[in-house]
Image 1 (tube, one colour):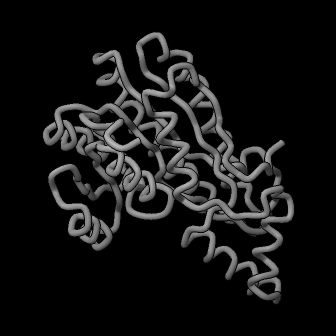
Image 2: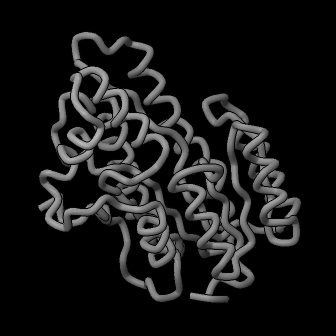
Length: 257
């Protein structure tokens, strides 16, 4: 898709690591101008040095704090004058044994995965609606569709994000705004590797045993790579996609059936 996105501007929340960073890389490679949002100033500076400043803007912001989204959107508009694409990839959720998961874990999952997305959607949608164009993809997760008792805060957030996506997609499609969701299966990011290590320690088993358990229901027998998810996001935001609206695209090697 080289140059397919030339002249288009993307805002990527959670764009400094993992799937969000893979989306930033893919969009830049396809010719877009990209603003990446993250909380870690060191990571943001690393990205500035890596991508330069011509087509890239690194923005520090904590989207769990109300009002941050308006400031971020204003900065993107000041720099690039438009926002065509929004990728909601901020946040991950904790988990554990249900009876021991504290309220703070549930609240943190809701604040970062849901409220951060809600705030960005509210801030960006009026601009897209006024321009009669826009593409939005939220990264959920297939924990919304599987019932792992150790991943319930994540499942709660992802189910909510799917509902928001489907409801808004129907409302905004007549205005030229295409909204979809992507739900990855286990994806080899730093977060997943840390989860492997934590569970291996809890269960007293080798790391490989935990990793294999995550693939037990995956017909492809492979973990997703962040780039697999980014390519799916690119399609949903590309000129190739005219009629895929309001879906939840599972990218998980066939685990969801």
